[in-house]
Image 1 (spheres, rainbow, N blue to C red):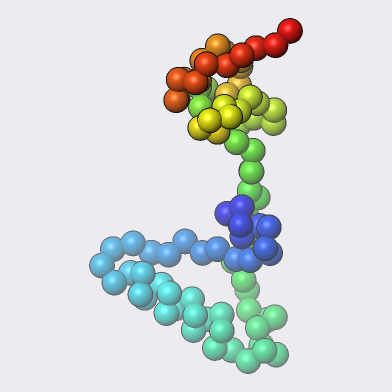
Image 2 (cartoon, helix red, strand yellow):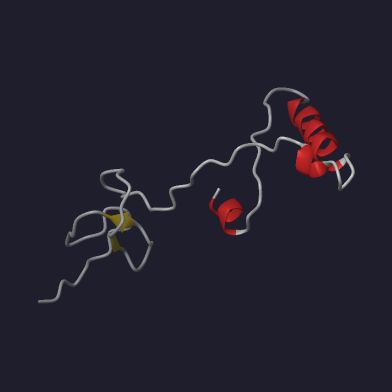
Length: 95
């Protein structure tokens, strides 16, 4: 969703089950791209949803605005610790 938002693109959730992907993809292509260029603005496009691009903390699962990142595995944490809970890297905490 982040790439869709940053490129002003569009994402659609396709159906599930045998053959559903082919049917959903065909329906989407025919609905959005078959009409002439003059008719496309008149077609009701899917509504955009807001995307929350904030990372989730590995230890609490909360969305963070500010967090601490392990320099080895890039895990994001809410609170400081002496060791990364994911890869075990020891952190050297300065004064």
